[in-house]
Length: 248
Ligand SMILES: NC(=O)c1ccc[n+]([C@@H]2O[C@H](COP(=O)([O-])OP(=O)(O)OC[C@H]3O[C@@H](n4cnc5c(N)ncnc54)[C@H](OP(=O)(O)O)[C@@H]3O)[C@@H](O)[C@H]2O)c1
Image (cartoon, rainbow, N blue to C red; front, side, top):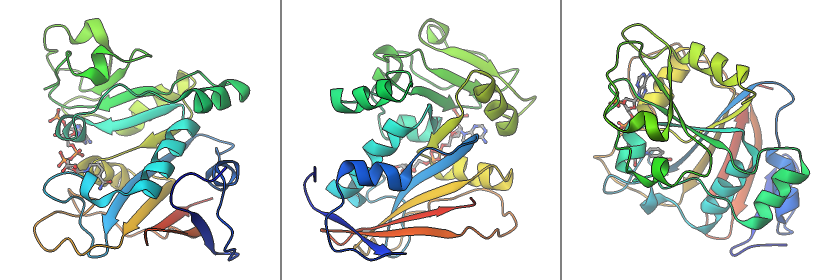
């Protein structure tokens, strides 16, 4: 089945035929070991947002892959900044995607995992209050929790003075959450890169010049450059390039 604007393969094997969801699912897949996959959308000139949000960069094909990657993961990792700024709602999947997960022995929904140092989080935000699976919050050992947060999420304290992301991922894996999809944002991506925890980057490039002003998809302290091999290039009917880079 092809949904909306077509997506076709450009590389490594070009094929003009639109990719159906089963083929797309196989192209992204689940790794056979613990794996951290980042997913971002950017403009041709490298902007992380338009008017402060990613929505202005994301068309139908990007949203299709975004949903598919959510279907494939055990945990959906997001930084508090992006959760707040993008107004995250509960992570829900349609029946077709839930059926796919059941058929593959996965929980019906992925677990939302929020990274926050200072716990400036609103328990009434739908991402927590309406969550189909109780979310986790990775935070510092000493961060005071706001009233009501522990009613809607489990706090995982990992790190003295700052969130230890490697320890947080180890804890997720201990809970059986091996396949982690991170939807950003840039400061979390920068910290994960510094800690050398990123296995894969799925990057949508929208055919748009956003102009100066917005930041990049990564932010924070500099870290050594690391090679990340290209795995596939897909082209969507709206001109968006869907790139996948992965270590393995
Ligand atoms: N284009 C895209 O695909 C995409 C994707 C995601 C986001 N975005 C955009 O990115 C912007 C939001 O970015 P942002 O600057 O707020 O960055 P961010 O990385 O989304 O959030 C930063 C916040 O997350 C928490 N955090 C992140 N890394 C942490 C770490 N290593 N340790 C402890 N806490 C950590 C902290 O929360 P506390 O303050 O609670 O301590 C920090 O203030 C928005 O404009 C959004 O639209 C774009």
